[in-house]
Structure formats: C-alpha cells, structure tokens
Amino acid sequence: MNDSQRLQKQIMVAIIFFLVVGGIGFGIYRGVAPVSPTPTPNPTINLAPIRVLDSKFLNIENNDYDFLAKVNNSNTEYGSPNVEYEIKFYNYAGQQISNKIGRFYILPGQTKYIIEPLLKFQTPISRADIKITSVDWQKLQTLATAGATLLVKNVSYLQNSQAGVFAKVGGEILNNSDLDLNTIDVVVVVLDASQEPIAINRTNIFTFLARTTRGFEVQWFTPFIGQMNRVDAEANANVFENSNFLRTYGGQERFKQFY
Image 1: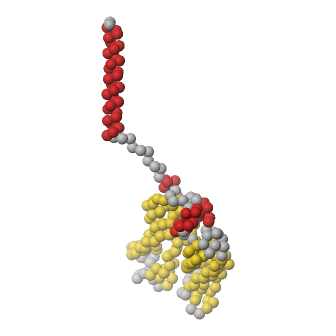
Image 2 (image 1 turned 180 degrees about the vertical axis):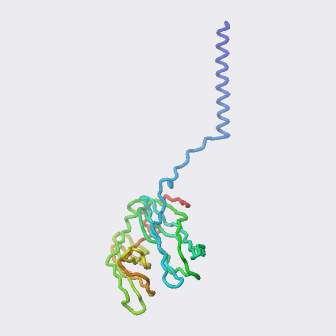
C-alpha cells in the first residue's frame, strides 16, 4: 500500500469516526434537551374583545341610581355564558367610594343592554365607570344562535294610568322557534327625543313554549326626569345554559380570557 492509498484510508476512518461520535452526541443532546412541541394556536388572538358602546348613570331620587350600558360582541362564532365586569362609583371629589361586580351572557354578533337598577348610596355619586374584566369564550354554531328567535312586538307606553304607578310599558314576545325555553330575560329602556336613556327596567318570562306568544309588563312607581320619545324592549335567552339546545346545535370549545 503506497502513501496515497494509506492517506485515503485514514481520511475515511476519520470521517466514519466523527459521524458516529456526532450521532451519539446529538442523540444525547436530544435526550437532555428535547425539541419543544409546536404550541397550539390561541383562539383569543383572532377574537375581538367585548366592547362597551355606551353607558348611562341615572339619578332616580336622592341617592338612588340606575346604571345601564350597551355592549357588543362582534365575533361571529364565539359568544360567552359569563362576561364579568366591574363598575366603579365616584363622588363629586373624584374619589372612588364603591364598586359592583356583575356578569352577563352574550351571543355571537350580538349587541345588548346590561342594566343595574336600584343602586343605593349614602352620598351623591357623580359618575360610574364600567370595565370588562374577563370573558369565558364558547364557540357556537350559527344554527345555535339563530335557534332561539325571540320577537318583541306591540310595545306600549302608558303614563299616570293608575294610582300609585307613574308609568308602565307592556308588550308581547313571540318565541318564533321550535325550542321550549325555561327563562327569558326582558330589558326595557325608555329614551327621550335625544335618544338618551331616561328610565330602565327588567322582568322575566318563565316556561316559554315554542311557537307561542307571551305578554310582559314593567312599572315605575317613582317619576323619572324627561319625556318619553321611544321605548327599546329586548328579549334574550341564555342558550349556554340550555343543555338540550347546546347538545343539538352548540359547540363545546371553551376558554377564558382576562383583561
């Protein structure tokens, strides 16, 4: 074997040696520091937050107040059975003197009122600020959100029509679906000519059968300031708590998001 052949053999042996040692070293490294799995995409990245479109703090009498807000969920597939919020109340010196924690449900693509009536304080309140603090997101199919169709009709407003009652609003709600619903939430907002809320109220309808119409009525015993121009009445059903509805139509994908 000449010198050239001997050199080629030495080079081949060296290459094989380094490949074997390198493979063993890489295997040890993978065992000690394994490759991190690809993270699961976070659905919240593509979800718009629940927005507070407007809010109003109404002085009923003395230190008694009503609060309402209009909220919107612009996401078309995700809603929430539990949106938590905090309202902070301030006096005329700008000091926070109280707060209130609450929650509501909202469907995909829905805009709705939330109200906190009959708030009582020891001192006058100058303003109230609301903030969404967390949302339990749940994915619902389009059919699920459209399944409970509630139509409000024949809304009427009467003032000073009976002794002891300043005003009342009545109307009818059609359950235009094939679902029997346990509870319907009805919110009534009275607006003036500037479309500013001047009074709020709420009630419930229980055991609302499919394809039937039910009446509702709310009353105010204390006069409110302003002249009625229009009445908003909305009816909602919490489909997230209807197990049959969700089992037939709804998805089960859930996660919580904090703000």
